[in-house]
Image 1 (tube, each protein chain N blue to C red):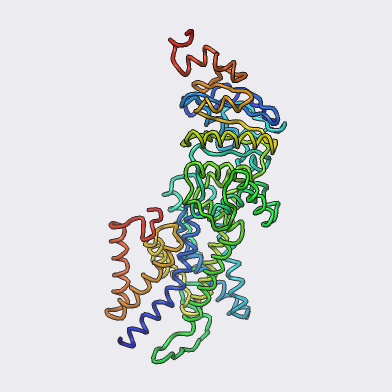
Image 2: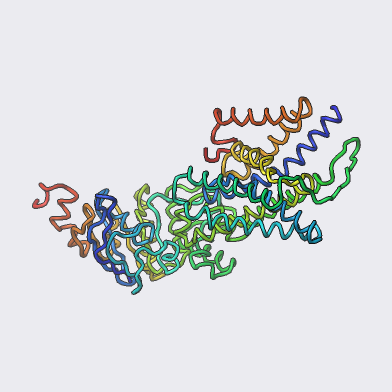
Length: 243
Length: 286
């Protein structure tokens, strides 16, 4: 589904992502973890087209998408959410999602279909689909749901989920994780999930990749990765690696 | 209340309609593309010349000439974006100001080259209507009505169509809108065409009241820009309200003092506002 090879991004002399390679199979959930500044968000920006790579290749369903315009990448079936929700505050909830449904398919659907798809996405995440509901009353969990609904409304085959648990309480975290499971289970959408909160992520993902200083430190099954000395060193420091 | 004061207020209200239309166009472009078209009023001048030329030289009826002018200035708006704005969209705002400022002088000089510095008009004399004891120019009344219809039409377009919703959304968060699959260049072109079209509509309304000459833009450009700043740059509702505040200052100030002094008062208010509330009444971008 997604094949990334030798991906590198330098900002002047600072290399944010250095020769990172990974692959994601159809309907798989890959977790991407690492401390702040490890390059996770930069990888999302590169894959979603917000940034162009300095070097390397990004192939989505066999097609090279590195450096392509972000809007074109969405039309190809790749969507992303943001760590900090960014709703259109002046638009009602339904229009927030309907506009994504309409343009996500490059305007090839009619207004009625866009609204129908928006309502379906809102129902999936548990938000109201009536035309007057505003974004003002939404709390952290509601805004995360809206973020996810907008991405799903573009009808992606691959979803880049950026810190879907940030700012949520324990119960909301479980709900959000369950929702991502349903997105994969019911819609067959492949997911790459960046997260800080490892406990919840590890229960959901099929595989996990750990980044540090823009490079891959470890990759494998969650149970194996958490015992990897290199990962323990990244998170807890050198003294804990052999403990 | 003094009947002449009432007349001044009514005339101010009618002037406010056309100024609101101009401010709406400029605000729309700034809100979406983040560029101030300093030469916006010169596009109005182009539209006025187009109507004058079509009507006087080719005998095109005024309503048809007005429609052609709206389409012509809409096309000019697209060309301004494609040829001048798009190549420097990522550069410093001062470059964009200088480029559209250069366009202002180019259009003025080009109009002088084609038509000379003479004042020209379409030769239409519309009646003065008496309502009670107040005398109102039919041309102003027509301009006010059509400007309102134009603004309602734009509101419906922005509210009811997806490209309209995209225009509103991209003005709020450009990056997110791109990640919803919107091609920003397409939105910018549509916005430029609408902004140009509104300038064309304003031209069709102003040519009924004013002579056209190469410097006519200077009569409306600075006041339109001030209205946008006063209302809050990029805020369409703010621009609408500020247009009527400014037009009333000019009308009532003109009644009590002179029309020249009323413009001085309006400019003074603008300067005070820059210090007191640079983000404008409705809190746009300062």
